Length: 305
Image 1 (tube, rainbow, N blue to C red):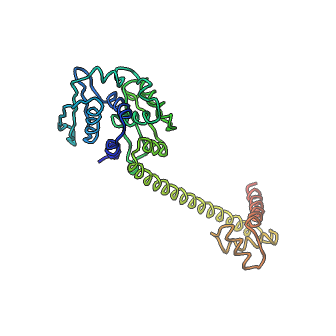
Image 2 (image 1 turned 135 degrees about the vertical axis):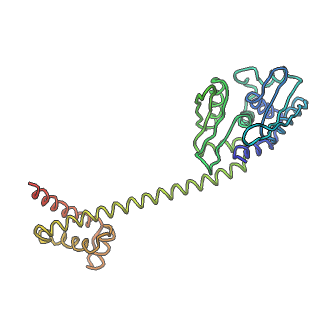
């Protein structure tokens, strides 16, 4: 079962009052129903089909006709078809199904806005499983004005949704993991939220560990490269006059660098301090190597001229 199906199963088992049910039903039918002489609703999710069946029964006293068919796709999923033959005009009018965007009375407070977004998700929403891919929440709708309306409604909750035209439809999408978690919380998919957040925390921790390891490796590479260059400078000085060209302090660090060729400056300062009983800091070591580097540069310049 996909993560999207898991979320829809959980949300479709929630119970709400009549006003919230109407708002949710409005969004669902707007994006799912085919309306002619009948209202025809098709879904692959049995739990969603039961959910909409009970909404229509409780709100309008209608018993939809249910048909189950097996599809012809690769997975041969079952499709659940609900057909309503009565109160078509009343349902269209109440739920604003014949309008570009719903009237304000359907979404006039926080509860009804959340309910409307639940219905939108049940009808046309999908969420990538956080274990298998990048974080992504999306909805597909038919009209641009309606897409912008849905995006604005999502963004009232700070979800930072965007609208993108894709083929002949419009995709409303959210990509930030934290915002997708907020959406799951908003539609009250609490178990799905726990799963999502557990995976998100694990992935964030793993990514942070990888970044730290990469950073540590980069630091090690830099230390080795710097130490290697210091050894080359010292060997060059030895070949062109010997370490006597250096001051006493620079000679000391040069001798220890040749002895400990892969040590970091901090490690070298600790070794020298311990073995000579004279405190020398990492900064002090760096300053002396800078003088060694300057002398080696002068020697190279002289050899090239």
